[in-house]
Picture 1 (cartoon, rainbow, N blue to C red):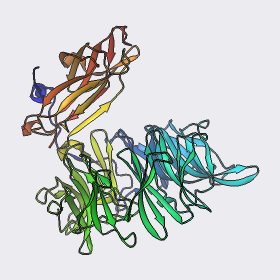
Picture 2: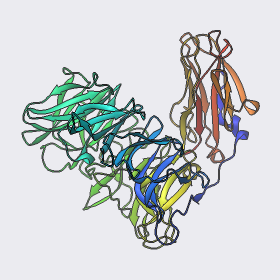
Picture 3: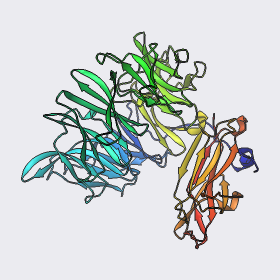
Picture 4: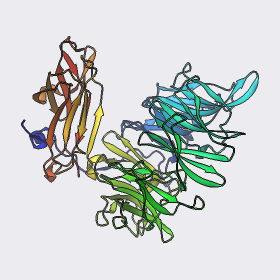
Length: 576
């Protein structure tokens, strides 16, 4: 088999130059506009902003100045941003309905009221707390039998698809601390009754909203906080002490794992290990770092060098490593661990971090490679930092506001197509104020495998194209393209182009620019699978190269002309 390399596609594209772009000066002068809410569906970043005239309202950006604009006239104080099914769900008041559930597809026409659950100007929505698949879950007041009733609701963005699942507040009044976890086809959450705590799950239907497990009357708090290793991981308080439990979604499969306090800072690495801050006594603060492979026998102490603050998990950075906000010597700074005491290292003594219980967006992995961005505070103020997991590779991206001034709003860093959108102060805006800026992905040296678009069906379903063997980082000889669910023993033509396309061909969509694409034919195996190695040379000139891929499978049961099935598109961005 011929070994492909990305050098074959070098002529397809050129690296995008580094750029930092002010998207819009929404509130000219010394006052910034950003008011704290931000969320992304990958293509569009939604955020709340105040231009000084219309008040706090809803904005969007696709990472370009032309694509940054105010979405809806008359909406006041949008909050509780959650994205599900590519749409933004939020609560806002349009001046006549009170706080109600709204939805937006990123266009002004597509920003609409879902339902007015309380008549007139009475507020309905209390808090939007979770998403699962294409649904959003929220607490709301409604009128039932002429009486006001608080309940747990779901919505798909339509009035018909918006209804109450369970009456009551599920035993919680602190919505900012309400926890839920998605696993398989269910959202798992906590329900408190007079007899004790209960673990529940829902598939988004009333009939599918059921109890999984009842703890005894000593269980006063149950916090599901992670789905990993095909299990839900829960912190359970019994007899004033904390215990770690797991559940596979069945009563029999809900089991005690070990005694001790594990807050919600569990962080899975890429390579089958999960780290967590732990206190074996089950009381007080979590002070030690532990790791698990999902079994009790494979759970062990790592280090006391630093702990993970409550509510502030880390982020994977490749292999068994994670970067995390580590608390040591009365300060919080970026740390890395590989699961050993010697491999647990403080990355910077100057980049102080300020994670909080409510906001945990202080760390973000750049693509699927080995770079992490975070906000840190040192002698130049609070700015955007980046790390490759080594002290020498931990540095400020740029000092946006020179001097001891903060250039970055702490938790505002979201993806919009080819850019990250960050709320930054550039020196023209007062301390603590910010406006939306775009930072090009290629500036970071990011590496990505990400699907886009949709394939069309053949005899074995819709062919699925993925990147495997890690991200397309420099020198990665293991990177490969993986095609599955194609017709068995069929010719599959793999196409690559420098830019995506979106051409409708009957029920199918061509997602690459065929007229400029490089094409190569291969044959699938007896299961309809094909793996094509695509080694990435260690050539710095390739950083920033985008290649867009799609497989065309010859298939007499294919949706296209009864001759072809098409995979989804796959974008690869070469980085470090």
